[in-house]
Image (cartoon, rainbow, N blue to C red; front, side, top):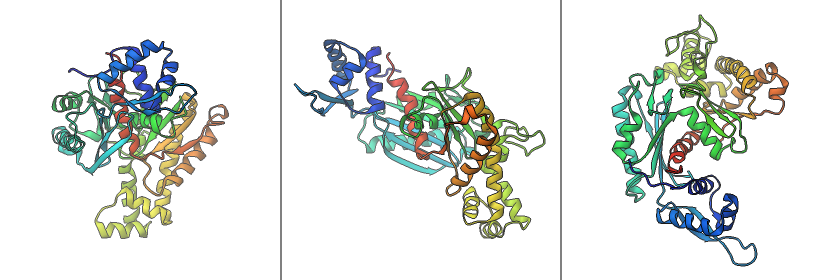
Length: 394
C-alpha cells in the first residue's frame, strides 16, 4: 500500500536521529549527517512537505545566527499493540515513540484471532478518532508467540492456540489502511528497552520476558537479532528434564513448564491442597482458584511454600541464563514480566546461579537487573518495529 516516508537514505537517517534523540538543531543535524548546508536544507524541505518533520522553535545559541530545532511532525502517530497474559494493551505514540494514550482490557486469546484482531481494530480506531487523526502512520503488534516476521503471522504458538499462520499483519493493514509490523513480545520488549529503557546505553544485551510465555530478545551490535527464520530467543522451550511436567508445546520438562505462570499456579494449587501452605489454601478456598498474583502476594507476605516455588523457578531460569551468558557474552541482562512484589527474590536467586556458574570473563562486569519500563517496553518496542519500516528510504 502507498506509504508516506523518506525518499532518500539521508532523509531516513535524519528521521531516525530525531526519533531516537528527540528535537535537534538544524546545524547539529547537518553536522551529524555530514551534509552540505544546501543539500541538508533541501532534504528538510522535502520532509516538511511530506509532514514528517516540523520546526520546534529556536535552538540554543552557539554564537552568530541562531539555528532552529527540528522534530518529527505532529501528524506522525503510531499505534502499538501488546497481546498477552490475559490482557490486550493498545497505545498511541508520537513519532519519537512516546506513549500519548493507552487502553488496557482483559482478553481471551482462545476466542480466536478474528475476534481479537477485530477488537484491536476497534480500539485503534477509537484512539485515532480521540486524537483527531485521519489515519495512523503505522501500527506495531507484539504477540506471545513465535512470529514469521516476513509474513506477519504467528507460527505453532502454544500460547495462541488456533492462531497458527493467521495473517495478523495483512488483516490489520487492510482494515487500518497503514503499514503494520508483527513480532513476538520478547523481541518487542527488547526493542523498547533499547529505545527508552535500561538497555539504551548497551549495544549487546539480553531481555528475558517472564509470564505465561517465556522468551528472550537479543540485541547484538545495537540491533535486534532474530536469526535465520525469526526464531532466535525462544528459550521457553529449552528442555530442562526429559521426565518433567508436560508443556503446552507438547514436550516435557521445558523451561516454560517449570517457570511460566501456569506452572507457578499449578504448583501453588498442589501446595495448598497438600497442606504445605495455609496462605495459599485460604486463597484457594475463598476464590476457588489461584493466580500468579496470589502466589506473589503469599511469597511477599512470607509464606515459606510460596517463597520456595518462586526460588525454585528462579534457579531453573538461572541455569538457562548461565548457558546464554557464556555463549552470547552480553553487557547486561534485563528481566521483565516478574509478578509484582517478587522481583527482588527472583533477581537474587537468578544472580546467585549465574554469577556462581558462569565464567568470570562473561560475568565480570555484567549486571542482571529488573526492567523499570514494565509492559510499556512492549508498547514502545511495537511502535519501534513499524517506525523502522516507516523511517526507511523508499
